[in-house]
Length: 512
Picture (cartoon, rainbow, N blue to C red):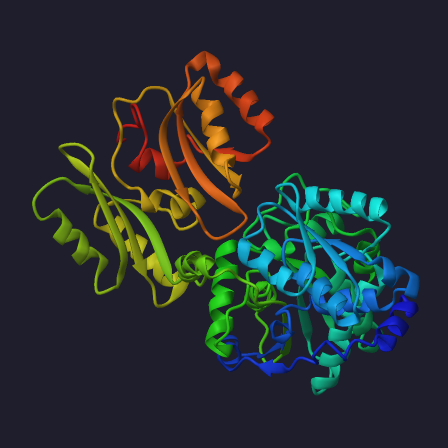
């Protein structure tokens, strides 16, 4: 066990600026899960995130010469605010490099704390590379967001507090994981004091940084990480954090975007505060662990790590929360195109709340309906609804787990385009910076015709686009090469059933 980290954590002098946050019992979750559930409320820090602990502990450790030269950091959010506030408190100049895609509200928040801002690149990786160069050029100290012993020790003070606040050792502590600074700091302290307590990391399914590294037995660089939980969107675990994590982490639980949204709602129901996606990650993992293990009457702690969420992202969270709780089912149903068919279909659904209902004429004999139905009893009732419809002769496809259907098709059900030939469908993520989408469309328009387009802004650094494009059979390889050269994240969805049922161009699959 890394003894030196225990000493670092115990010596950390951070409480002239950091708050000792409460360990609050989540009463609603406790009743629902039949376990004692507690939230460590790091959303109550002055910058609404735990990041202040590590940043301040690192900056406070600087020599007088280093303080006079100032500090530099790369961040799109919470770490930036932690560094800026810490530097202001200690009278040190701070320079923060932020991606050009950083929402204005976050840039303004950091500026308000007295830091100088440089906008560079479309991603954290690009901003970090530039910050490291500036640190050398300007002779300033680079404050790493996670892979630094003093930062790790600062985050570890959370464990020191919660073990003092909790009556005896809990069964497990659930910790969100990005670069690993938080879980390695907490794990080092917890395993030293109570080796039997489980330290469980939680990551999004589309950003399994630590999960992948533990499975491989070495650090790996992910080709792509999901952007919804941007606070943990890290492609590669830190070197020092991984060394520690291998010793102190029991396992890593992976959760979906819908499960994270449901956890944000759970936190709100219990605290009347809104966690950011990364902030609610531990709650999502805790719920999944309880369901998987079937445990009862245990004491479980989730680190609510932050609450820096853009207001305009709440729409997306609200839309997906019911799906994450399995309180809504999305179905594609084929009904006869004849008088009374709608009425008969509604009778088949029964006395259930319909969350949405989209219909489009298909042909003279059949119609496809896209319907959302509210559920009271989660998975079991979902199966009952589908079985009831199938039993009455309807053709039913469950779209609840279809990402393209949830993100795009449900908002654009409007029929097929039979006059469109050779249409292929692609899903993209675009950096939300001025001109990025225009540049892409301009380049594509020189060679291929765009036949379908759907875009939704969720208040994140990246927008989501669904694109239909006409490609001659012999040009498919060229088009794929063009996409790879662009450098955007993309996925082909031409065979997605939601698209082929509701929106495809050209000749769609015939009814079997």
